[in-house]
Image (cartoon, rainbow, N blue to C red; front, side, top):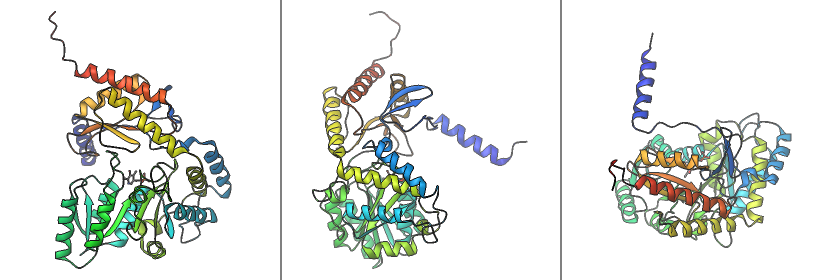
Length: 404
Ligand SMILES: *Cc1c(COP(=O)(O)O)cnc(C)c1O
């Protein structure tokens, strides 16, 4: 007998399939380095967030193996007995690299965003967000009970109108939360202007550095992220969140800021308090990855790969977006086209993300090509040649069967 649960699940899944929105895993044998084995075939991967190639770096793996000697797990939450010296060292390293007083580790970026927003604002407050913010910021904002307000992507006039309205209606707290680098577009937020608006309306600026940390920065803090690149410090960008699962090649996340902010989050961020501490091996591997970020010229190599990709793609007439980051989307619009192109690329030996709604707005389905310092120019050239040929095939008018 079919239960109503089974009927519900079946109908929703069928609907997803019909909309070309059904998603499935690809099972990899190991982390792409950047070549991955999928179903026994080797594919050059342009879909990972391992921008610096640190997930497969031998020094990182060795440190992580040594870290496992401290115990397979943290055995409790950080505030009970799950906070080890290696966690503290990692937090201190993050604080040093981001130019902040202190940092706090979280299990993931999703948990960090949900925890921070909910610790800082609630009923009667406002949370103001860019329309294209990452789902974890959106979910954090919606869960908080604060009035949720959106503005158009990178639209400073729209943002100012929303801040003005919020300020007129309340003298309470306003949290402005944005991605530093947009995860599906690769463009950056105008953070310097946003910091000025935050000051004018007494809003608190929170920057999500998931794709900025390790990839961009200032002269003094070369890998701190997009806030540093925009010239912002702890006063102008007081709440910085970053993940260890992207450029750091590992997993977990952090929030960095003033001593008081970190102390406050330690007391009030529920996704920090009510969860098991980061496994010590992850902290040890992440620390090794961060030391490599500081020491090795990985960021410069990544930049040269980005420049190479853009120059070659431009020469081939591919429709590039306004992105200077490691994320280089090719917006194709329709879900079916994106799936067909991604499938064709896979047949030609390349793994590229096919990103569809609801991850991106309707009508903007895209290939999300991500670059890494570990890619060779030949691999990039190979991808672009395959892409140009595939797109040409797709745009060819369908034969009517008549000879001309
Ligand atoms: C990936 C991502 C997150 C979530 O980080 P995880 O550590 O993967 O949970 C948050 N914000 C942005 C912008 C991201 O791209």
